[in-house]
Structures are given as C-alpha cells and as structure tokens.
Length: 68
Image (cartoon, rainbow, N blue to C red):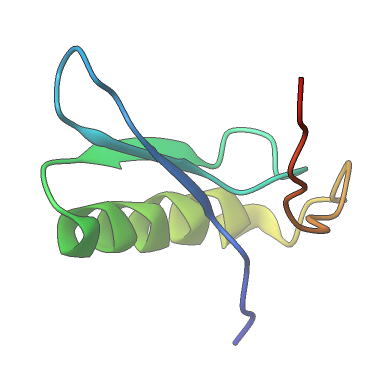
C-alpha cells in the first residue's frame, strides 16, 4: 500500500470538490462530497497503478501564505 497527498479545491461554479495528486500524471477527479472525492481518487490511482507505479514528476511540499 502507498499513501499519497491529494490537493483538494472546491469549484465555486459547480460546487464540486476537485482533487489531484501532485506529480502523478492522470491522478485527478472530482466528487459531490469529500468522501466521494476520496473514493474516486482511490479508484483512479488504482487504475493508473495497474501497470506499475509511474515515476512521480514532483512532490507535494505544502502551502504558503502570500501577502500582496
């Protein structure tokens, strides 16, 4: 088993939760709730890993506040 960090946003137009795994090509989806989003991400990642673990293109570090 592997654990991945998902970045989650909420689309203000649709109200959907949108999530992706940084650096993991194709690992993105959406859902009506956070639980549905997590389930959808698990499904997408499982499908992408059927042929083996792809080489990640980047690593999630965190967030940073920017004052303008």
